[in-house]
Image (cartoon, rainbow, N blue to C red; front, side, top):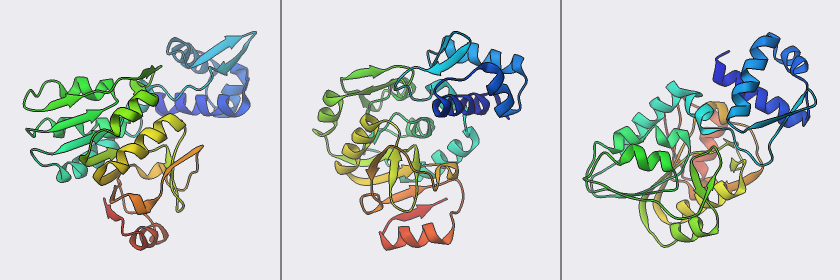
Amino acid sequence: MLENERQEEILAVIKQKKYIKPKELSEALFVSLSTIRRDLIHLEKLGLIHKHHGQVSLFENNEAAHELREKNHNQEKNYIAKIASNYLENGKTLFLDSSTTTNALCPYINEFSNLTIITNSLKNALDLSSNTANRVIVPGGTLKPFSVSLLGEKTSSFIQEFNADLAFFSCKSFDLSGVYEEDFQQGYLKNNMIAHAKTAILLSDMSKLYKKNFFTFSTYAAIDTIVLDQKPDNKFIEMCSSNECELAW
C-alpha cells in the first residue's frame, strides 16, 4: 500500500471509530505499529488528527488534506486530464473547482491563450499564473483549512455572477442516482458552476463509482460529459445514455 493511500485509510478508520488507539489501527490495517506512529505524526502536523490520552481522533469537518489527495490515483488523474484537454479552446471562459483531479488539467490549460479561468482553488491559480496570455479570477471567501480552497456564501455568490463556456469539476463519489460531495459547501459551489456553464464536465476516476456520500450536488441530467480513466459497466453507460450524458475514457 502506498504511503498516501495508507494515510487516507487511517483517516477513514478514525472517522468510523471516532476514537482509536494506534495499536488498534496497526491491527486493523495489518501495518507495523512503528509505521502507524510515523503516519500519525505526519497527519497531526497536517492538522487532520488530534492525540489525546493514548487515542487519536479527527478534527471536526476536515476534508482529506490536499497534499494527500494530490498524490492519490495520480496516474489516473493525469490520464483523465489529458482526455479533458480535448474540450479546451482558445478564448473560452472556464470554471475550475478545487479538486486535485481538476488541478491535473492546469498544465494543459497553460498551453492555450485568451482564456478566462474562474477558480476557488489557490493551487489552481498559482499553477496557472505563469501564462500571462490568460486571465485568472479567484473569488473571495473563507479559506478552508488544508484544502487550499475558498468557500462560503461570498464565494458561491461570486460564481453566480459569471457565465462560463465550460465547468470542470470532480466529486467525492458517484453512483446511478447522482454525484456526491463530503462537504456541502464544496457541493453547493460545484452546483453553481454547473448551473452557470454552457457545458458541465465531470472528471473522476473509477474508484469513486458506486459509493454514496453526504451531499448530492448534481444529477446526470445537468452534466454534459463525464471523463473517466476506464470504461464503466453497462448499467452506468445505459443510465448516462438515458440522461443524454456523454462518456469519455
